[in-house]
Image 1 (tube, rainbow, N blue to C red):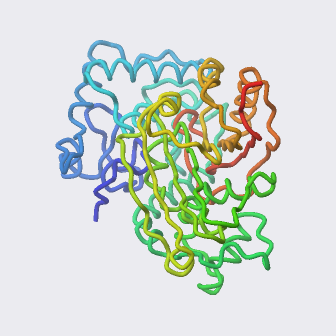
Image 2 (tube, helix red, strand yellow; image 1 turned 120 degrees about the vertical axis):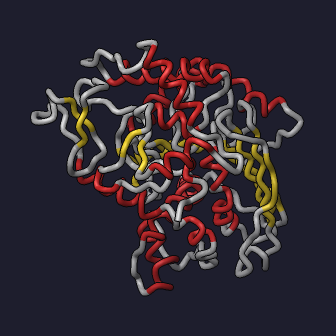
Length: 417
């Protein structure tokens, strides 16, 4: 059975793009050489598109034109990663102009996953690692890789991705977690959270659902515990509204908005939670209400609404839709450059905490420096996050494996001095 939303799932250049089957590396490439299939039927299905899904054929033709014009598959190699990254972004711009439209999120993943030698970044005559199938080497470096990779981690990532494809709907209906929070239990990290609130109902047996569930819970739990440990969260003792701004967001954040219900569980009086998701990478504007659990939220007369605004944060702040936030959040951020923070500086005029998470320490430190230069602010908390997700992800920019929200950085506010 094929997941109809397969373009929203992970991408791997030698895994069937439709059913996500590796077939022991025996898939075959599309004409463009960027996408693989396990059968002619799946290739045809992907090329044609259906139910509002854009087919692969137009994108494929644009790639073939670039190859014919010798603008692709001609990378010299033997460079640093940042040069290879710039090359891929440049090629995305050329494809965009060929298509005369913006690239879709899955098309960006395809371009960022272009096969290359893990040592010299050469694009042709490649062979995948026979163990994990996740890293390629050219003929020169296959037998003597100067830059070895963590094969076990890549194997675990690919196995988890292929196993987890059909679990999300199960996770959505799985548990209400009405026992959270409870002062009787010391919940200090994601593992103890699961041991206390999730696993007892299943006799402490772990499953693939737990891995998926931890990913969806990581955002709200990270923000709540980060604010709590920094003494920056105030729980009103009367009916109230709590507004969370999630900035520089993508569709991934939108698809998982319902899991912010668990943030509502910390409020003991009727509360309306409004999660405002803002980002240029969102595919559409939307808003609505989220159904709440009967065990806890309904009894307390909580409400949960969300809004998605496909625009920059500066434009959102200027819009009529703007709501003053109680906290501003940026999840698994790619650090914007210094100039971007300078432009954003005038839009941070609410005295509220700012919680930012990252997939590695390098990004966190880079962003701390950019914010210091722009706002003259230092984080009050900057550590490895104990509420990161269990699921492994692959960074399409660098090829590295990471956990969601691996590092957390908290500012008391970003008010200009």
